[in-house]
Length: 223
Image (tube, rainbow, N blue to C red; front, side):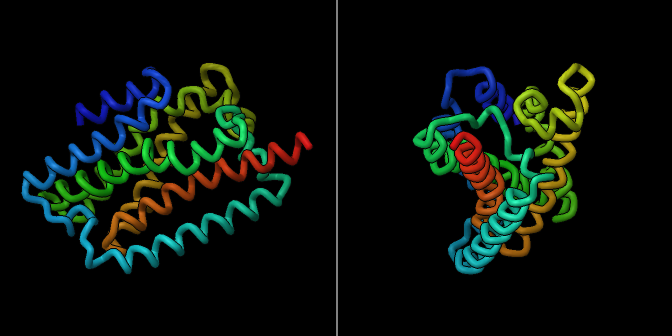
């Protein structure tokens, strides 16, 4: 866990694109440590035998997010949720972030760490229920630093909670709670599919497609 704390701080306060380098390296290191501790590829959600099943769940997850985001973008009341100042980027930067930075710098490390290694290790000693609970709680806490300026960056969040100190505290607590619940969903998807691919696909779709939709809406507003 110390390694994950260091990476989290480095991602927030280190040089730009730190996660793009650290994410894959730390993910590989965690997998090596997990294998040395006795976890199998199946324990980690990386067994070739579950790849086909995981691919089907992954496709369904991406499609479901696309439908939900499409409806949300079309409804004026929910459209401000996509207005996030952190993603005011040029087209090339949007595509690079959605298809390179998010998959390699965010999804890969977080899925390997929380739904792969941590879920496998805790599950071996405490069972599937506690593995999901502990993994998801830590996944929520992982998002404290990334959510510190969320109220200022996201129009809908700022309107709901305010941008002052109290609003920032509520935003962080909300982000931790929401991502912990999201972690439970990702753990369940990983359990049902038997594959880390399914959870990774849903994770990418939630982040990456949100960025793409937000960028598309911004382009329409400026046109």
